[in-house]
Length: 247
Ligand code: PEP
Image: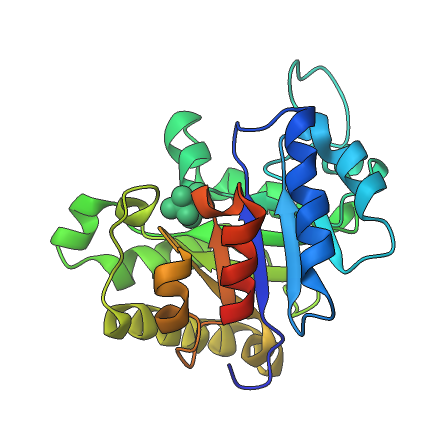
């Protein structure tokens, strides 16, 4: 992990109502003095209450997406400023489910990342190849294309985290081999250093895709893996705490 402080972030996706806030409270209680950064991105309806219940703890709360604009006629959308106003500290942009379900392009993801920065949020920017691209041996080319197209100028370790999430590993129980994960992360690191110099050395690169308590102990110690973005296993505090412990 080379001195980078690990981050374990949970993405609840479209799961959770007020009763699930008990999991966030259990998470807060179980964290103790963890030596890594920990975040949960619940549905937008729960951000305000999740922030209220985690006040004074190291558990950060964030959004799962934001619009590129600060306000305006965009029915159903959420501005980064609204996430910040609700007490959120971070926002995920470019998740593969947004790229696939909503046709989000690299250019749009880049604009959303800039919106997150405008609102003072830490941005977790997701990249990763589809199964067809993986089978065609295009993983590193996809990473290059998405990094070049999605990551704005001005990235620093304090405002950007990259989440490498092979699309075929999300929610499937499949993961790349440890060697493949390390190779992809080392490649991302090299590209970040080439573009951002010393800042690129310290920008964290998370792995995402079917991280569970059972495999976290193998994946998280890999040299260029600085934590995890966790979907399904973030819904239960006990599972998520086990992953945090592995980091
Ligand atoms: C995700 O959606 O970012 C994710 C990694 O999901 P899961 O952990 O369920 O594969």
